[in-house]
Amino acid sequence: MTAASALPRSAFAYRAFTTFFIGRVVSILSFHVMMVAIGWQLYSLTGSALDLGLLGVAQFLPMMALTLYVGHAADRHDGRTILVSCMALQGLGAAIMALGSAMGWLNPIVIYLIMILIGAGRAFEIPTSVSLIPALVPRDTVPSATAWFVSANQIGTIAGPILGGVLYELGPATVYGIAIAFWCIGAAFIFMIRMAPVARASEPLSVNSLMGGFRFVWRDRVILGIIALDLVAVFVGAATALFPIFARDILETGPWGLGLLRAAPGVGAAVMSMVLGRWPLTLPIGPVFFAMITIFGLAIIVFAFSTNLVLSLAALVVMGGADVISVVIRFSLVQLRTPAEMRGRVSAVNSMFTGTSNYLGDFRAGAVAALIGVVPAVAIGGAGVLVLTLAWIVLFPQLFRIRTYDELPAAQVLSGEAERKSS
Image 1 (spheres, rainbow, N blue to C red):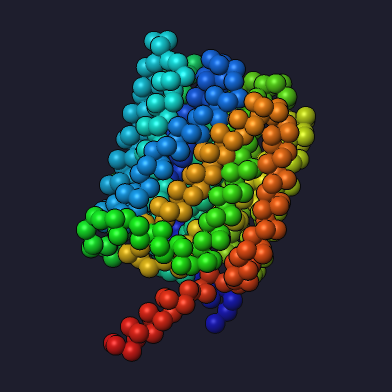
Image 2: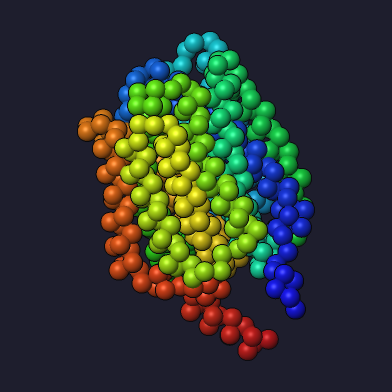
């Protein structure tokens, strides 16, 4: 057998994944088109870094409140129905923003309430999307499909902010109208997915069922370590909420500059995720993961001190490329080390940790920037990422030593052996 024939088939050889990929791209595009308008509107209304940080809190609250039920729902119900419902809920939020913008009654409180509504939709959307991947492609194609899934997110992250920044010149209501149209298209593609039945949890809703994902993560030191490091690194290194300030006050650009800043991490991430989709990672994944977190922290520090738009964009591109490699490693490990009937709940825990870090990280950035300024707030965050990386190598040596995605936890190995003996 040649090396080329030994490679797994492309994820796009499977129609279900292709349809899912398109729907995911359009959904993420919608979200980021809308977020440019929301960030610019809010900063225009208040001029406050803290208020921008509160956007993260508004998205965090529903995710925190719903996480336990989200995983249970993803394990028990059709993921396609959940995803279509999530897109409809976010489209409703965009419709209210469009109406408020057109009629002039928007204020910060209304914006925060809309973000809570949208956060509720995203609380279900993200873990459900991730848990669907192993049902769309064979096991050996999951790492490649995961990389393409991440690239779908990044394509939307690139095109959405740029499109939102350009369209904002026509008024925020136009931006929200475009977002609604994209969500309708995305929902149509998700609805068209055809896939084989998957194993679903049969246990009824209970505290024991809801907590199953947390128990599984706590027992697996590799999954616990990789999720926890993502949480703390993104929490201390988050800077996205402050982009309107960097765009207007430091780099002296308009909404188009804000769109470029929000898109830049996605450019690096999209390029790298496409590379990983074509050529899955074969290097020892533990050391690679820690190396990428280190590069992520260094890029944040460069961005913090830059006063040149090109250098700032370059730093964000590098940051996005490093981040996506760590994300692909994390998603692949979580999916392949988790039994099928538990993937929804474990993905929900993963999503809660990452969502917590993103949203509360934005609040941390806004609060610290309000106290000491935006540049030191971001620079301190980048330095904190470097310190945490060193600490995690000591605290989770199992994660640093792991070499391949197929190194299953001992509990699953024993379970597999027991099943083989009984059959």
